[in-house]
Length: 252
Image (tube, helix red, strand yellow):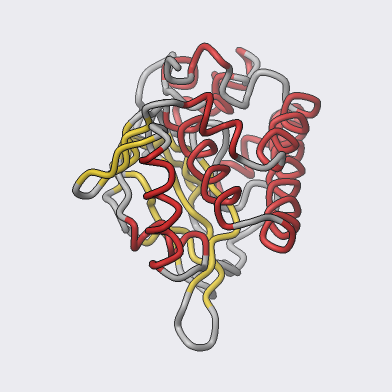
């Protein structure tokens, strides 16, 4: 039996991808969605695990995709917040996960079984089309991230990551330590410490115990490379209205 979360679950969820559903498609998905609370650092699946459920981050919740290397280290490849979903969006069946999916910022999610999503897509081709377009946007984010890591400075990449996190969660407080940020960017902690110290001196942010507080979002965005804007532009073209708007961001 499915856990019903309300007739208007998609519209009220705080997940923009669900909000983009047509009313008829929302009516199909709503009875299949169930609430779930993700804790910080909680692993949704590891590489090789069967992907049995789709997770929709709501509000400030956010998930990282991380590729796990042979030495046990992990490198982030994508951030997924209220603009998207994690797990089996396009693929049919419970295929194995390639990367680790980890809750980066804790909070509420909606989730549903892969089998239920496939059944829903069979009922409505427009559902399949929506998720296929989202998968294209997610791939664009991964491609842009590869280019960013190769071409831009640690300062630019740090600013870009923080901007991306704020856009997905609504900031201005980012519940992340310097060590965690260093892991996300695959750089040494000493590099991150120097960058954050520079940002603090410029009045861009404050470093607090277990979090970063953004003081000047416009200056942070000006410091970032163009990669986040490129991803946003692609989202806007392929899935207009899904990527968080300026009204959803923190006040400068």
